[in-house]
Length: 323
Image 1 (cartoon, rainbow, N blue to C red):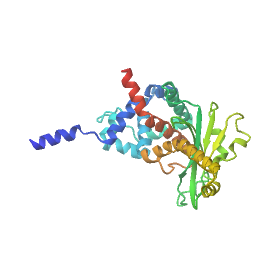
Image 2: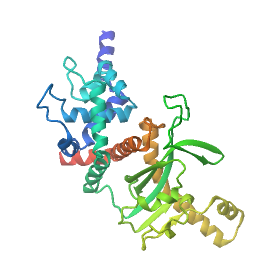
Image 3: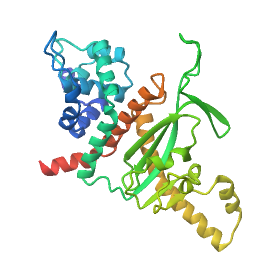
Image 4: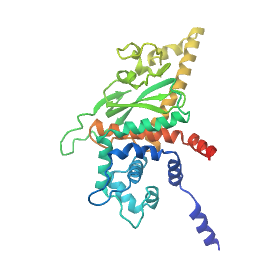
């Protein structure tokens, strides 16, 4: 009897991956995204009928969530029943192969649908009252790229460049984001090579409805650039050298300035949350493709999914209250 009881307990236990996919099942706006992609998806009038559009979209998101290549996704469908169930595939029926998965991704890239998917997700979040858009926090992070020249071109990716952070050099690209100062949700994404300064992209990360903008010391001078909006104040962190000198002073004015810097730092901390989600939750720490275009589309998709992940509890609560 003990063995039977143990088997029953194991069969009802949910893994973290199951919980994650159940939550994503509830919060991803599947119908809206399917309607967005449908005009660009084949109707299947000739040859074998294509897989359902929503199935291919679910596979595409599984790749982002679990760091799966096209071939890795194909193999995982044979190995992991949970993935087949999430993608609404019959284990005894036809399964998408690597080429089918690749063609779907290329279709999204060709029609630049990643940015439209981010906009669709953000429209949903705004309608739910989860993005206020009164203030923006800007920041950037380095994404590593392979520096080896052991490839068919015998060269590193020409669109990636080296950048120095602290005393260490990094080779790759930069992801620049603008996030809502209240919710920490991403509304704008720009990607550049790694040697582009943060301040260069600062004003391109604004949506135009801000009443204030926050950034770290890398954005000093952003408000004086030609592309800066006229009436939006920038709250930029004091440079490290000035802050260090300030800590040595003990006047009342210096104490107030130090307190202000701490408040600004607390506000800016929200911009780190989306980076943590894509790097720790989704495991995205290195570029997968060559060139900026393909990697940019993947990063934009990841931030759209990170918004849903970060807002999942509020979205599920609203669905439960409505139900």
